[in-house]
Length: 253
Image 1 (cartoon, rainbow, N blue to C red):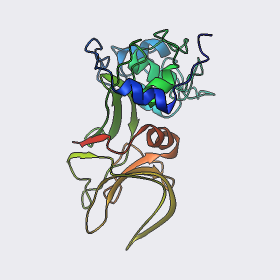
Image 2 (image 1 turned 90 degrees about the horizontal axis):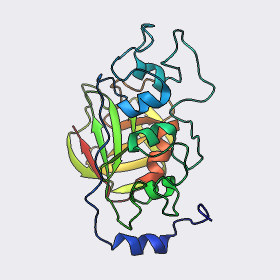
Image 3 (image 1 turned 90 degrees about the vertical axis):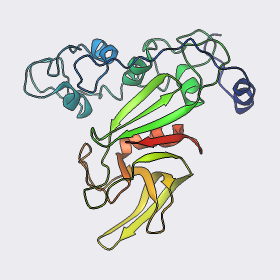
Image 4 (image 1 turned 120 degrees about the vertical axis):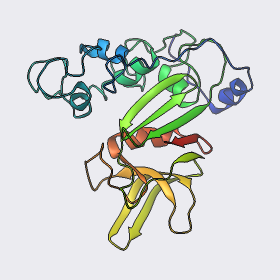
């Protein structure tokens, strides 16, 4: 059966020893510079050449990230967010599939017997039927207040964040995931945030370590406001936490 195979840990170890492919190409074109790649805009029906496709005064990117339809003339709230919709049930949202250039209506885009979502989870390409393993990486852009993550050349997802404020900036540089903590306490002179979920430590510091982590105490993602860590909504952080590995490179710029 086409979809009965699942990627086991032993299979992954074996495949990781195989050579890298050089055929894959990035699919991150964004003609109008609105933060939504062209392929995704075509999937959802917005105009990849217009930042405000429906001319309602709200940029496409803002509508999508807040669960509205950017292709309609009115502010229509979607029953299922375009960022969460998973039409084929493979574990990748339609937005992720548009980023990667996989088929959002096919569980196994390259017909290799492995579900697209599992291939991305373990660092394989869902567009390459060969046993080629790719590295993962995370990129944080403080100017745009976004975090993007990749498997090899494949852009998996871009999410809004809140990095450090002017007096408590997030450090720029190249790091890696040092530790994964499912729950952590953050406390300081003016804050006490217990039971914070999904924490990725990326920089040790004697005055307090730096993490990418979920944030339940605000919904101002897209604005700088943290004490130096990278805040991510719980809706987005769970997938990122489960996807990232110890040692996954992180670039903050």
